[in-house]
Each structure stands twice: as C-alpha cells, then as structure tokens.
Length: 178
Ligand code: GDP
Image (cartoon, rainbow, N blue to C red; front, side, top):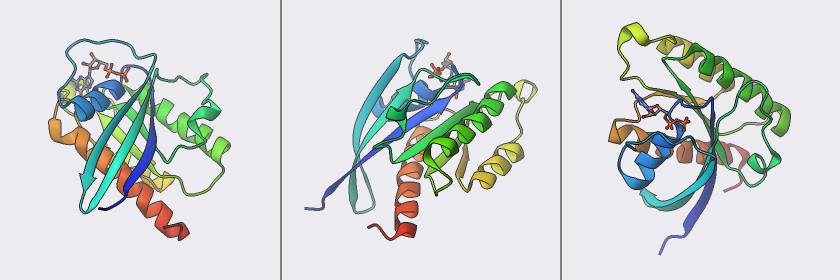
C-alpha cells in the first residue's frame, strides 16, 4: 500500500473573496448556501492524485487586511499557501500583494509553494475590477501558480487543491528532499 502523504495548507486573503466557499466546495462537494464569516476552521480531506494518496488539512482563515499580521502558526508546519482575491474587488488584489510581502518577511526569500487564486470569475464583465493578465503577472513575479476560478464550479475547487499539492511536490523536489 502506498504511504499517505500529509500536507497542510493555509488559505489567505481579504474577507469575503470566497476562501470558505472554495474549501467547503472541495471538502463537502457542494457550494455553501449561507454566508458565514469564518473565524478559523481546519478542514481535512483525503484524496488521490495519480498513484499517491494525500491527507490534506486546509486552514481556512478569517481573512486579512493590510493591518493583519500573519501569525507564526501559519508558518511552521505549513507546506503551502493558497492566496485568494476576487476579480470583482481591486482592494482584495492589493491585499494579496501585501500578504505575499508578509510571507516573504516571515519565511525568507526561499521557494514557497503558492497558488494565487482569482475567484468569482463568474461575475459579469461590468463587475470585474481585476483583469486575468494582472493576476497572472503578479503570480509570475512570485514564481507561483495562477488560476482564475469560480467557487460555484465544482471542478474549480478541486483543481486548486490538486494544484497546491503539485506545487508542494515541485518545490520539495527542487530541494531534493523527497
Ligand atoms: P471568505 O470570507 O473569503 O471565506 O468568503 P466566503 O466563501 O464566505 O464568500 C463570501 C461571499 O462570496 C458569499 O456570499 C459567497 O456566496 C460569495 N462567493 C464565494 N465564491 C463565489 C464565486 O465564485 N462567485 C460568486 N459570484 N460569489 C461567490
């Protein structure tokens, strides 16, 4: 039997960008109907990618703004980060930029597995405040993966969590740890 690999990731981003919706859709398989501002929750799910089985813990945070500190609990024992903004909220994009600076301050300028997620891609064009290219450019500047998604789409949340697992493996392999 293959070994189950344990991974722990943290979801960061401005409040109400859809962090919980993405996590809940992935873990429970449905888009949450009610909006409950998250305090902090850890979701766990076991799933398979290729020949490997992963036990993934997802720390869903309350959300950050430019004055929030990232606690040390989000650094030690954390394998990767999913930084989320909403394509309908320019401010949430700026907060994503700030959060990455905080992460670099805390963890040092080493390779860090990150997926930058532009959520709410289902919003109509007139409500869009951040273009795809802006998100992609920011993720490239971090050396991170980028995905534009909608938490309403069942495949999208799965794609994000698969991607972060792959990014963690990619970064670990580049250190020759595995
Ligand atoms: P969080 O505070 O970042 O965890 O955000 P939530 O997941 O609680 O979502 C905040 C609000 O945005 C809720 O009303 C959700 O239904 C809504 N929402 C989340 N994801 C999407 C999405 O992809 N598209 C749209 N249109 N609304 C979304």
